[in-house]
Image 1 (cartoon, rainbow, N blue to C red):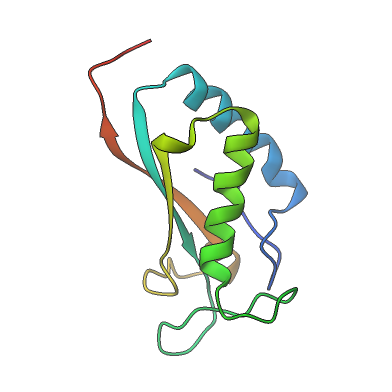
Image 2: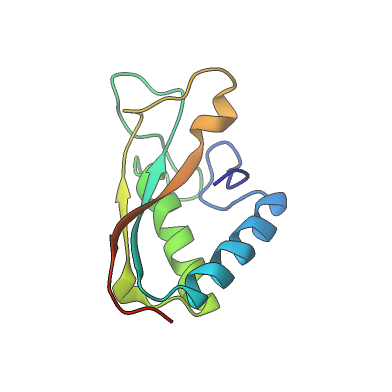
Length: 116
């Protein structure tokens, strides 16, 4: 998914990302047979460590970003049992502009036979 981007040091998405999240929620509500993982990524840290959340001062930014998306989708109506969230730290940088490493990725983990 493009455009699920975060402010430096914060768990919340940029305002421009909310439209993409709303569209994702609509699709996931319709396609209730899709199970997925929300993977939180950070940039600009040393030795694959996590970054610090400015608000809490804890070194868990990739995790709380993934949890933010999990909570956002749940509030929109996506069943929690279909989602999980995980921290990926800085293990998979994309290169180029660091803003693209302040991201989450939605990875489909399972598609059931039940189709809507």
